[in-house]
Length: 378
Ligand code: T4K
Image (cartoon, rainbow, N blue to C red; front, top):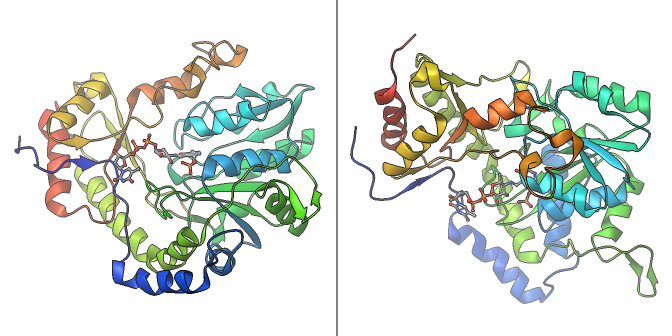
């Protein structure tokens, strides 16, 4: 095995534009002294982003989690919400913090997204919404979920944190459902350090969301609802505008990393890789592999430790399942054995480093760790 790199390799590394390109934006902010509360850059960024994503309305938020909470409030979701256990804990917490009960539904083994065929049996008289997650940028089976939502009069609110720039048959996936939430966290394909957005096709909904993200304030003397503070300052808005100029190049560099891994891992017995889905323009935000311990000759966790010993920090997104955390594990749908596919995927998944600056030498070292251990090749 090759020598560990002196510099650790993390699961991701954020892309930043050249610093000098940001200076003119800073100068404008210094001149205007308008720092936050729907400033000029904020308005410009929302408009530019809506155009880039091909969506009608969008509200920029301080992060994805607050956007999820505000979105649930805007949609007036109550009671039970059918969701996935295979997600970052923000999804489940947003449901809980909005005084709703998460109802966990199993996932599909190919895309790791909510299995629509298992949703209907979980609908009760208390169900008001479905909150699916497009895991790793894999689009959910929207037509099926939409049909179930229509049949039972449910709201469909997508956690699209991983979905920046993903299109299906040429259409931006964040157009789906009643609302979609995007995350622009530092670890995402498109980052504004921290940030997020709610996307809607409905102008009235956009207005409601904007009130809710500003304490529920309508004007100087009117507060229409108990809103939180989800606003974003001019620094991050200006940064977002600049980042937009670089995001296409970011995605194509990430695609090269994914292609490299696929080519060199497809013959490793016991390692499953995901392929691009037909008609989908992916963003390559994550590169998950599944480790079949018996076929590969080593468990996912031992492989994770091997990587670590080589200075490579892979991540087991999303292990443990959200349904196993203390707040949720006593729910009837969280009982061990009730989510067999999610439980298996959570035991086997490992996300390899993927980011624009990952060079070939380091990619080779990552691939080497996996290939050196392999028992056989197919
Ligand atoms: N829904 C879903 C499905 C989500 O995945 C997320 C967020 C949300 C909702 C909520 O959206 P936000 O409120 O976050 O906008 C990270 C992120 O913090 C989180 O945003 C993300 N999902 C989740 C999947 O991953 P951690 O705990 O793994 O982050 P951390 O700090 O361990 O970072 C991972 C690696 O990235 C580090 O080992 C090194 C590298 N890194 C990280 C940061 C923060 C950098 O190189 N630079 C950095 O600034 O949660």
